[in-house]
Length: 249
Length: 66
Image (cartoon, rainbow over all chains, first blue to last red; front, top):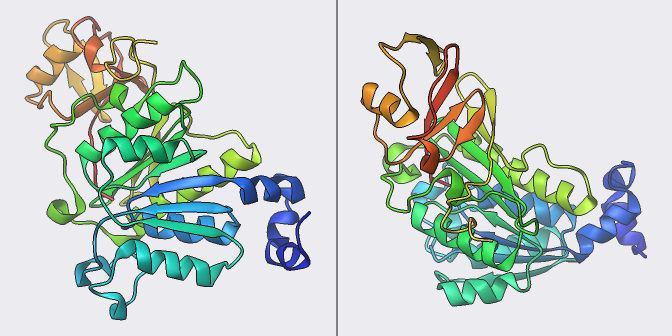
């Protein structure tokens, strides 16, 4: 049963047959790990907290810098120097006191990440470097935890969803097999705030859809977003049977 | 052989596989992803996958920012 307060708070969800009270319960019971509290993680965490995801775990190891404020919309000027996860946790609890938020203010080693995944229903990869992305992918494949990946630089975004609870699912490594790739990031290539915000927002949308039981439009697909034209391209990803992460089933 | 690469028409001098196409276009092998007719082709298949007349090839880079 939802409380009277919850019925009011989530009334715009409850009007939707795609969510309804049953779906809101599923959101309340959901446990989501968000890794990276930057330009992707900011809107994703705000939307998931607002939507009533019952358990959010936030992971980052950075403090807030003035150059973050151009796009990382959870933070304010007075937060400079504070921990990203601690500030985000506080904001999310102010936004929605009904949910539980836990913060991990460190770069998680593989073992700790694997332990966290035993408690997570879904992971959002909102990180900013290839090595961490590969580590998260492998841990999610091993733990069979679904993973929604977002990435953005300049005016370009990438979005994909791998449901690792399904053995036949491809993985991030099938698409991008090297962790040593010279990849561009926001610090060296630049980024426009709403581009990374669009991708983070859609990670949150896909998470909500996953829990209420709506099919994903990006499962086993890569969506490329062009912020100049607002065009989207959609590519199918098959499992690479030679993949060193998910290929040996 | 006429193909499209990132929506630009291109004529190839001879038949080639994906890895040869990237070399022909002087694109780096590392960090690139390739889709043929909107289907991503895994890197492990690049030397076996021969490009066909009329194929619509998409080349893009991994991005990691967030």
